[in-house]
Length: 229
Image (cartoon, rainbow, N blue to C red; front, side, top):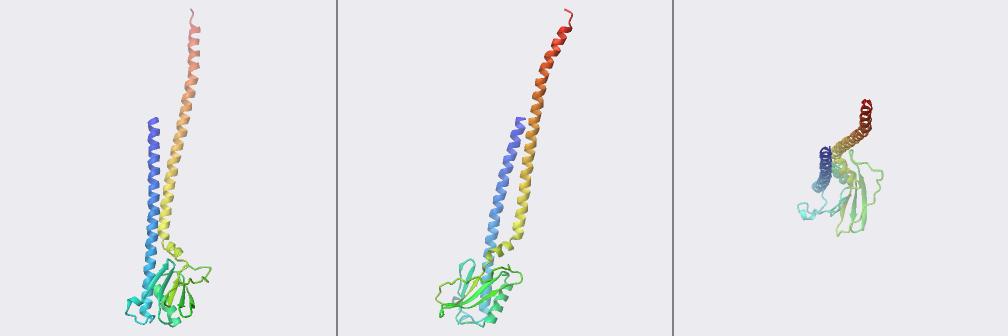
């Protein structure tokens, strides 16, 4: 019985360690998937901006890649250089088309910043059919100090969009976690039942032993009293 209990405890301890390791691996894997989706988002936005440079005359020399400056001051913000103010209707239509072509399906607040006037001279909210639809569209655009005019793209819900792209992986990880929790609960339940069964068996054995002792004494005494001598 003692050997069986030790074996069961060893099995429970091993299972607990394995479940902990699997959960840790799942969390690390989800973090890597998030980093990959974040990197892919940055690549797609950069490709969209490059496509916009190709579609429109935003800089003086379109063949000079040095003039096509793209900065990413923070994960939600992209700015790229312009030398002249483009046609606004064409700009917003082309920008939305480039986002669609390169799978950037999240809402964006765009603005044209002029160094001469030291302010945003035009702002536009760009929504897409499959985008994360916000309840607050009036996000103020951050001002980034540069020595040239630029167009700023601000993605207020970039994090939610990336998580939305990961829903399949999050759901599969959650399902695996539920299976592991169920497995751990089953092992705990079996161990508890075994503990109760052993306690009940020990009680019955002790009770039987204590009950047999006086009965044996009474039996011997009765046999002695039945003898004629």
